[in-house]
Image 1 (spheres, rainbow, N blue to C red):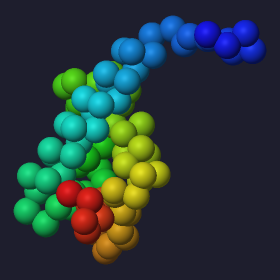
Image 2 (cartoon, rainbow, N blue to C red):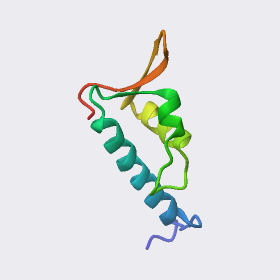
Image 3 (cartoon, rainbow, N blue to C red):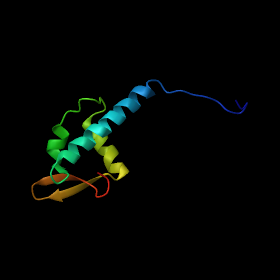
Image 4 (tube, rainbow, N blue to C red):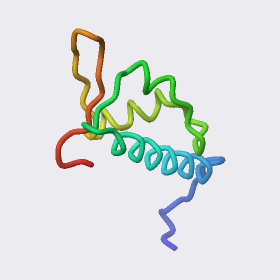
Amino acid sequence: HDSQAFWFSVPHVGLFTTWLSAGRSELSTLLNRMRRKEIMKSKLKSHILKKSNLGMDFHILDFEASGRLVEVFSIHGTIYRVRRGCS
């Protein structure tokens, strides 16, 4: 070890990464099962994740920030659509 280096830890970071990974895979599977790879915002937000305690809003923001999910506005409401090449 370098004398100038230091170590730090974040409590429960392993649990957070487990929930993040599980939520991403569950949301990805849910979206890819849809016929057109899109779902109404209200339907997606009402879905309860079984493998993650982070919440659907967190995972939707994660997908939007990474560019995997696009928000499309329609007459019937907001639709989330998987970006092409990201399925």
